[in-house]
Image (cartoon, rainbow, N blue to C red):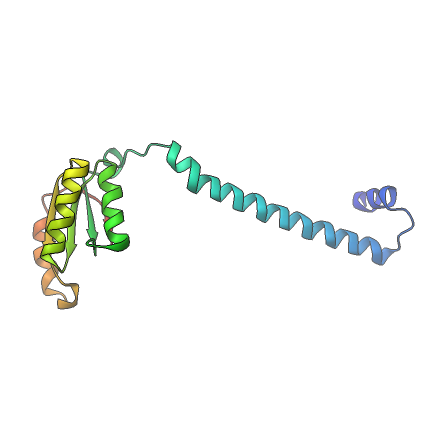
Amino acid sequence: AEVKMVCETLLPGLGHFEYLLVVVGLVYLGKVLLVIVWSLACGFRAHFWSRLWDKRLVETYGKWAVVTGCTDGIGKEYAKELAKRGMNIVLISRSLDKLQKVSDEIVQEYKVQTEIVQKNFLDGRPIYEDIRKRLQDKEIGILER
């Protein structure tokens, strides 16, 4: 009733079908505006707020993070970002040479502890017991795979 009164005031002389079209158009416009505002809010949160809000990962999650597949690509960048925020890193991957290189790079740049575990996850279940033993005395807060 209120929408009809507003439509009659702003758009005099419209029939019932035209009023219906105006209402549908306004609902669609509201949806589009809501999507735009939501996208802007998500973008702000991801790109600006996260940089302003200093996350204390060690206090929140623990001293150690485990990163698998960490010798290149996204895994390596995850390990670096966690180290940048003060976490010690357990690096797990197949190549011992690459593991040592990444470990040295992280220790030198971020002054945190690292431990390397050379394992190939394609070897199946037998590797998990050894990994568990290597991790059992550490306060693990984050596992990134």
